[in-house]
Length: 197
Image (cartoon, rainbow, N blue to C red; front, side):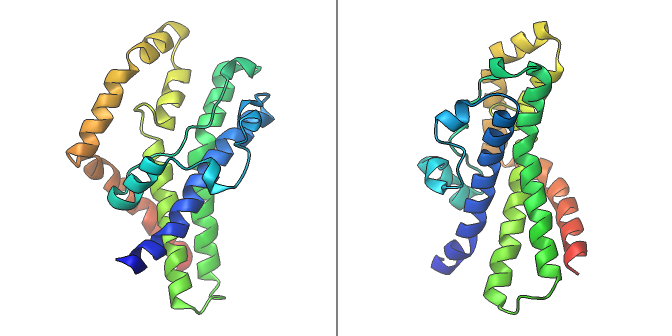
């Protein structure tokens, strides 16, 4: 059990930190310095981890980090820029998963333990990226969906988002979330495995 934890810990930390940092960095590039002022433009895990959410990730493979503060009023094009910021997290995870797979495929690492850690790291990045694209609050996909809606419907979406949040909790509690995500994650894993081999 302790070895399993040590195998998974680096992958979890990398996936979470890169994800949250990317949100804040793209927001900063697009004119919002809220994350920077909050000290979140950093790769220091302690700045991004939510203790309970991290424990949930370790135990149940579903959890959360501290959300990066974003003020969309600072964007030049609120809807477009909010979509870019929301997608930055998942896309950064996909990029890391691909880069790690490419490193493994080069056969420059002979240590089995290190290869195993890297593969788990790639898997966590893939899983976290896919999971966050679901259109349920507070996930990134919900912000993308809301930003694509006309302002009137966007307002209604945020007004009633708590009910969509309940749906997400039910999906996780009943393990239905695995039935939804497993085919997508398996597809992504097949791509990564083809890169590796």
